[in-house]
Image (tube, rainbow, N blue to C red; front, side, top):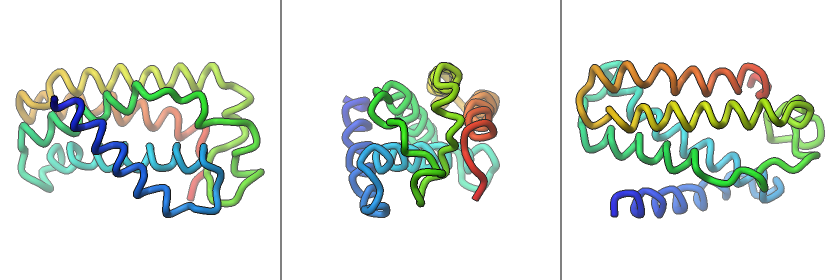
Length: 151
């Protein structure tokens, strides 16, 4: 039931996030909404890991479970050619994504594996969650470094 609730939460947040970029094509809106949801959930566990908020096992587990759910979304329609930052204003996706799509897919898989690792320990204590958060951040950074333009 928790997984179902998490997916419903993801859908609601994604729908709200798409109103921020109404002039962008739907696939770009979808991927940007997805990344906003990822950032919000990573923020929950990252703030606990840094000591900015008190560790809460239920909240940590929910955020980690949401990240796993996001990692399982079909990405195929989020990335049509011609939706990079050279073709559209309002996206930071570099054209290199479409030049090396297999690498992007591999990096997405690494995020999924890292999210699963985090979900396996997030509700079991702060120390385990902190240790598992590093690979999540590393997987995000690996893709951003290669395929996302700086602000």
